[in-house]
Amino acid sequence: MADIKEPLLIKRYASRRLYNTETSDYVTLGDISGFIRGGREVQIVDLKSGDDLTRQYLLQIIAEHESRGENVLPLNVLNDLVRSYTTDVTSAVPQFLAQSFEMFRDGQEKMMQGLGGSIPGLGAVQAQQEAFMKAMTGGLGSLGTSWATPAKEPEPERSRSDGDDLDTIKKQLAELQDKLSKLK
Image (tube, rainbow, N blue to C red; front, side, top):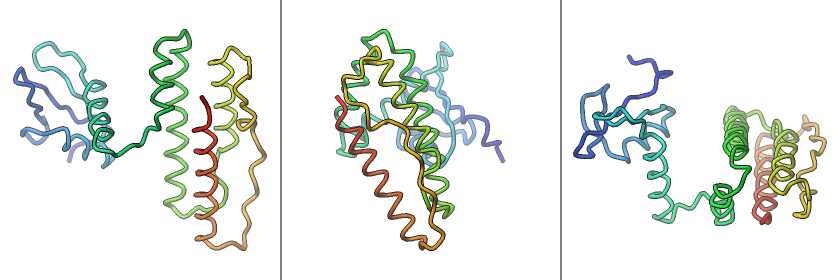
């Protein structure tokens, strides 16, 4: 069995066909998307040049999902991403996104394990978002970032049921998403 810590190597041939080196067969973008959803990292390289094409193909997978109406990225976030490519703070964006998604994944894992209560690390995410917004706006604070002020995380109540905890987490996530969507 392959070590899942190693990325699955996919080679792109000159014909643009994608070849799974573990199973010795051709794969589609849908297959690659399935590998990733299953928790597997992939690396896609051009057979002839050796160039790493992973980023290009992952962006293509995202674009295909978005074009089918599976909108995960709100329009304002897409606009901000495009805008970030034209500013001097581009270097802060990848780190911010990586840390935000890492915390999001950790929160999801804890929810799936049934550890209800408050969202772990929410205060840290809010502080990180506030620092990022200050960096993006040059510290002007004119965007009304008071939503990002770290709040004391509520202590989980021991008497609530798991269903109540999940409802609380969903409500907190919805409120956070609403606040994020209001940023311009």
